[in-house]
Image (cartoon, rainbow, N blue to C red; front, top):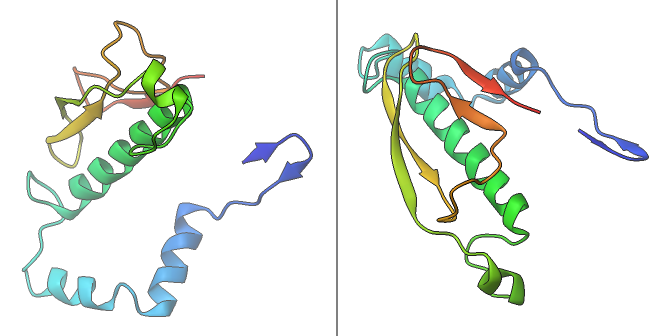
Length: 127
C-alpha cells in the first residue's frame, strides 16, 4: 500500500497463512476439515466462504471511499450521496458458486474497481 511518502510492506498470502498456522489459529479449522465437518469447496465450502467475505469487504470499503464516509456515519457527506441497500449477485468460481451482496448508491454508475465476471471464475481488479 502506498501513500505518497509512506510505503507499507504487505505479507504475501503464504506468509499470512504461515503466521496463522504458527499462532495455532488454524488448528481447530484443520481438525474440522480432517473430521469431514467442513467442506473445502462447493456451495457450503470454506474456500467460497473466504472469497465471499473478501469480495464483500472489498466492495464495502470501495463504496465507503467513493462516498467519502463510513457505513453508519452521519455527516453532510452522508446526506448528499447515500448508500442504497445491496444487490445479490452470483459468483461462479472454480471452488464453487456463491452469492454476494453488492452495496450500491442507487446511482446508475458507481465506479467499481472490483467486478465478478458472470461467465466464469474470473475476478479482476480494474484500475
